[in-house]
Length: 521
Image (cartoon, rainbow, N blue to C red; front, side, top):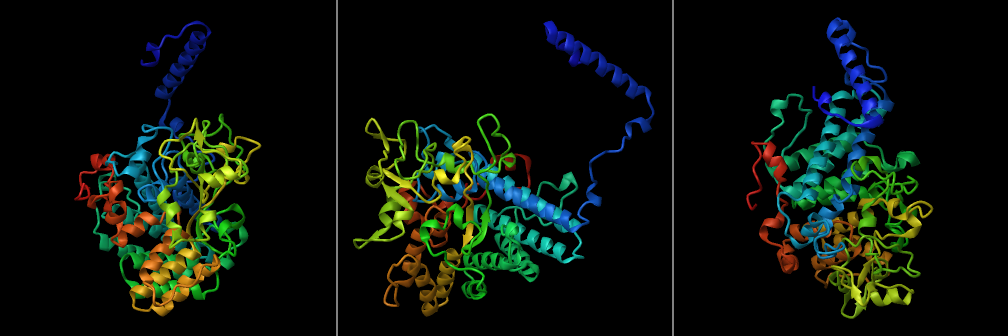
């Protein structure tokens, strides 16, 4: 009946009228036919109970979990990189003006609410990943070596998503099985200790069956390896202040000889080192997707294999940024670097050698024939410096199509320098500064910076080293929180005690009567 209420005109009317007659005829046939007529065999589909039988099907199920991991970091306007980086002191909100994508800008100024869409999308997509891991774990039998690896990998990925949730949100629902009954969808939050316990259980189980990175073929280096799971377990233990146990896990990674520092710091986040010697976990993107303004899917982030986030976060174009000979393309101006991070690279008049590969001054850009101003004015929220790490590099996108839509730069989630610095911290907190200095100074030696010695404040040296080595990589905000330094460093930006965790998304609270908001919110 609703179809008949629509009365188009002209040729469109004739076509629509014909379609309505055909539809009504088919409907009348359906009502007059037997039940057997409606029970048509589904072609090209495999029932879930018939899937997950082969090694290849188990691998497809694993790829589906990585699909969610990719989506959670490269979705247009919603990214885990935003959530972890914007609240720190390395970048501002940016954009075209004060009202451009306010859900992004609010993360930088601590003006976000439970209705912030970046927070909501990240939260729900973590559970998409957990769901896919649970489906695999409940349907794959470990009757082959490949399936055993898939099961271990699913546990490690589930642990990773839970790690993201517990560190950013605190108490959240802990879902370890596929919930088939809709009446059970409304899960209460679990205690933080229970979430950490599950993370440890999953990772300890995964470590047993995961292969070494060197045992994966080149095309599968993106997958969780034994060292990846050990590093993540060490990180989980470090965050819980289980320092001695954390140090043991990091030591296993270091002693495995599976990883090393890339020789050139300036290339650690560039395309030529992807899945290289320093990589433990990274999210893969492609620059050969061939996207243009007519094909790019703005609504479904899983449809795109490129990394749109770097375009969003490139220096603002529209007449402001000109790259000159810097090799950088202009972007849309979100997450511009701060002078705080630029200045942090200088201590006692000595400039750390990593600054040249991390952030560039306006004067340095001008010397390369570039520009950062329009009519003498900087773009909104820009402070006169340009981020180089995870930059809009023209040689990492497809300039033969639309450069803005085809960045292939991978996001590194865990790299070996991070492992060494976490090991140094775990040793320091365990009272073993001799071991801490060995790992700390490995990182400094790579960039030809002098050793830190026992006469220095070793912990503060580690704090600074993480700030400089890992700038713009999504670690700073959580580091400041767990060190108890967030109020001191971020107070002027709006940080308060309640920002220790993000609020649970309002949309989740609206549909789940068993879920309560974080107490400070």
